[in-house]
Amino acid sequence: MPGFVMDELREYVNSIYGLMDKDRIFPFTKSYINDCIRRACKATGIKRIRIHDLRHSHASYLIHLGCSPLLISERLGHEKVQTTLNTYSHLYPNKQQELVAMMESAHDKEQRKISKTA
Image (cartoon, rainbow, N blue to C red; front, side, top):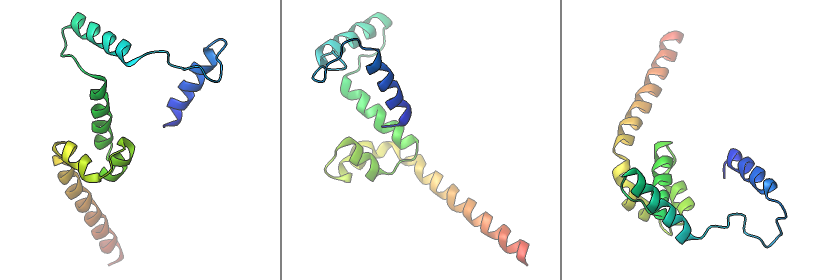
């Protein structure tokens, strides 16, 4: 978990009065959260999302950041990296272009080095 999230969580926990070791720090049930999402989507007119959809958003964000499929697979708890690739492969097409750009950049850098020494 990123440090900034841990800091926010620590601050939140410290703000709860009388928190005991066995208490839940987030006293919300899945049905309560689903109900909140349903009402908010209805009020705003946006398409309804499920809690599970947030997992997909997180995976998409990690792909956007350039994380490897293996790391994402481990984070999501997939037994096989192939599950991650099968589910999110449609988000990788532009990654091929990024890979080519990185190779071209490395090649150009190497060519500049060579021309400086010649």
